[in-house]
Length: 206
Length: 192
Image 1 (tube, each protein chain N blue to C red):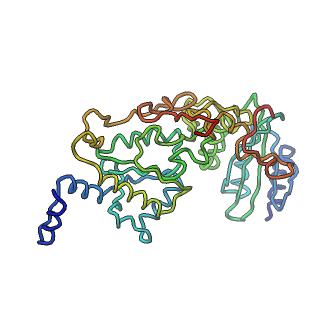
Image 2 (tube, rainbow over the protein chains, first blue to last red):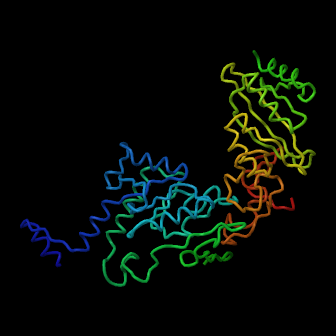
Image 3 (spheres, chains in turn orange, red):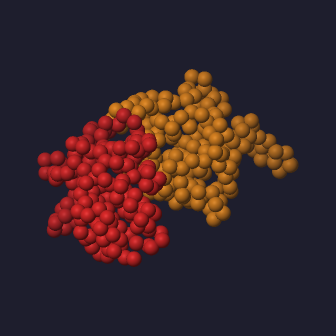
């Protein structure tokens, strides 16, 4: 609809919208996070949900204990190799549309435990992460900022066409393979469809 | 009753099995000569001496010494508020000693952790499985001879991802260095 006409109609008390805007507006303002935390980032997530920071202002206060009722997975904390298959399985059990926030250095890259023997070097090796929130741990404000950025991302999603999100595509995977415990590491060590080792060229600056 | 007196009572009961109580910064440590009798000694300490709380059960890898493993039991009495440390040694060939889960139930997970990280088995334990690593993991990671050389990661060439960091690790300190750079190297290679 023409913006000028729309503005004129709103002055006359007629509210117009599109199905896409209405759908995205309702979806982004009632994100239900999955109620789970893995390490100290979870403490900040809990703080964000309490009265001082009040994640309810952004419609995401309904922490659900069941993945079947959740839209948003906040990976808050260190993902150990023993825990990683369970996190992926929880993600697979969530209904579409679903989103992932990697909160904190550990969930993004392994953080201070990156060189250790038992920590997954980033949950984006197995899950499609929408928002990365840096910090060790991030402040509750940072989590709220990440949530708002995710809301902006949802608001911009078209319902039709080539650019439509994954949950509206029939050819996109609905769930992701759960890694198995191998003798030394998880098998496979990363999901090749989602994540590839970045190519790094050292030496002369470009 | 002080911890030293309680240790002396333990000595009177078990004789030469228990070493002279050693005091360091107000804490009393006794050493048990025969690890096979640790459950018996602990049972006596709990029932007769009032040490009703096992604060901690942990192990030390005295790599290069014989016997290699050192088990440390931290005992505490909620009635008399006294703390006693009991140490015993186990050889690497044996790597086995009796469980104390029959004395304190809380020893269950402590012993599982020692088994997981150090590979020392506890005879008679009700459920001796790995607790932190998954079943089938081939190493005992807290042993001093854990493969520190590491393996190439999925991102070779990128910072923090070369095989080097586990060789000494970022948090390993080398005492005696002149400055912090020598004492706490970010990564030491296996040759050093």
